[in-house]
Image 1 (cartoon, rainbow, N blue to C red):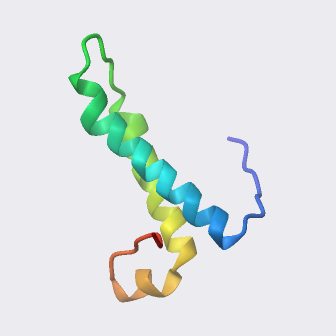
Image 2 (tube, one colour):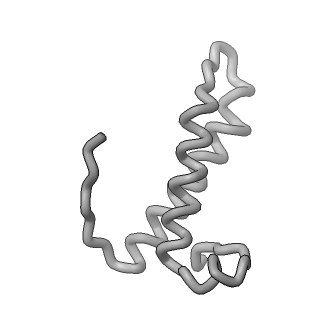
Length: 73
């Protein structure tokens, strides 16, 4: 596996997490309603983990306290 290092501003990180979360919702709940859709539950699970990690990076204190982490709207 190749690992990458990115430099992002907090605003970019928040936007990336929000976009990824929206895309996951679409893939999990909307796309399966279309004929011929072939879902990939592995990708959904991987994406959920990634969004969780992004949100934890944005607000590490919330993760320590066990609070839900949400991107600023």
